[in-house]
Image (cartoon, rainbow, N blue to C red; front, side, top):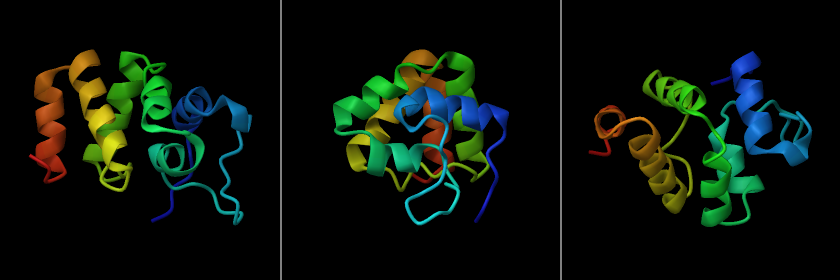
Length: 110
């Protein structure tokens, strides 16, 4: 699946990976299809680093990522195991337990 990053995607990606200066291309020259996967697998140096990056997101941005995940446009299940946990914990803390449960159910992770 291929999707072009819109302005909101770009804003979130830049906030999570400021060291890339807006570059959303993989080393092989393809645009990243997802926001979180490259952060989880290539950019964050550890689970703690991933969590700290996620923590920079405001509730609107986090909710946007949840909506993308629910629509199948953001791939949460392919993140590193600890990063999935961090994302779910962040959703629960910043949005709601209900939203986290809804997302887990949608992803078949309940």
